[in-house]
Image (cartoon, rainbow, N blue to C red; front, side, top):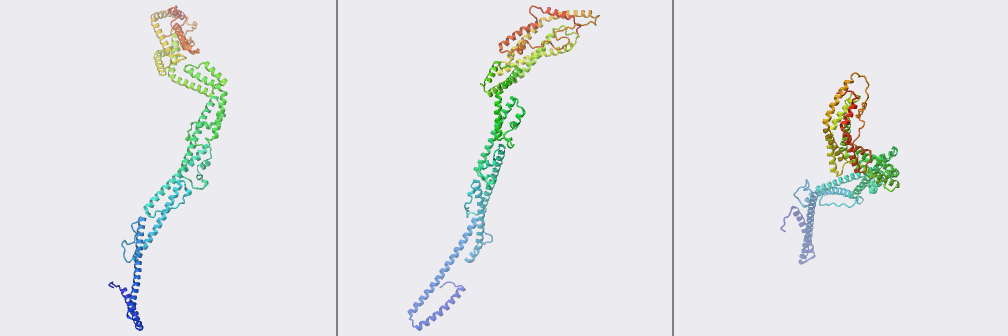
Length: 595
């Protein structure tokens, strides 16, 4: 056979040859005894040789098959090991040699423990993946609102069991945990807000929460639904409660203002106001500041509505009285600001409509309030000018008194109160000296006011500009008259001084004689105040009479001009010196002049 024999093979061959030789010799003996021919002997030996070859061939084939199986097992083990390394994301197993050595069985025996360890690692990794993916699936179902159907089959991708992939799943699980906690916190906040708003509005919070979803009630003992749909419903519910809270507060604000107006109009007593004090307190509070339980219940709103309705009915019965108060308030504002007062005829017509019930009470009061508001605005716009006009009126009174005082021949006499009149005259002169500038300022302010509002500035229905221009004209005429009378006045004073000196010398021996009191036009000896302290004729007519037309007022002004001229400059036909001579005769009965 030309093959190399191993020691074990040589020993087996020797044993075989010895056994076969012995049997062959025994067969030869048998054939010799039988007398078997040579041809049969060769045939039997050939058959024996074929049978031996067949037995060897079967053994060899079996050995080849066993070797192939070992190769396949080894290859499969290597492939499985490599696949496990790849799927677990590991490069190699510590303690296992990289190069193979030894027989197939030795190699197979060396890889089997490593393969077993890798299988255990795979199983542990699979369990980790199943646990993480199970939690992910469960929390995802809770977030999606399908927690009842969360028991579905978990499929793990065994081709990727690396730690990196496991970490990704763990991160996803942590994200879902955070999202779940955030959603739970949102749900708790919504529930707290619902509880708070329900206590303010007087509603059943449990019923509202159950209407959103039963799982939100802790008494149900089931997992809370935290899906987007539930969060949206909670948000909508909270928004609706906030809107209802704001609507009720706005309604109570409106009702509270009506209550205040009605109480003030009808002078309601404290006992009627006290039950609704909480409603009045809400007037200065915004919706976000209302937090007291039961402060915005439907019962409070209904009670307030009923009270307003009752007061409205009571107001209708007292409308005439209320209208009269509004009318008096309007007339007072108009009178103080010297603007036109509504006509009495119009007011009587309104009262007749109130009596007949043909006018809407709320519209009437609203109209009166609008008129009062406009009157207040008009008075506010006229305030600065009216203050200057009042100063001018006061200065005009002082000017008139000074004129009368200056014509008093006894103003320098030694009498009771004369020094007070002198001080008043000095103050009056200072005030009169400022009047031209004051009049110019009033004219400037009034003209600006008229240009801004495109209407005439009326003082008691008379144009203020005409009054001021009339005053300026009279002042200029008076100044011109004074200039014409200065020479004659100088002569008269000199003659009067001479007469007084003579009287003083003549009356010296009788110093104890009684002096007859002489009442002069400056208020007399006993009174420092003027007797006739009055406004100019035109203004006096405005205050004393109810003038309904501007033309009639202007006619009064014209009459006033004539009377003013007569009073200042004397009656026509009577020369000024005759009046002064009469005054000088009267003054001879007075005492000596003061220095």
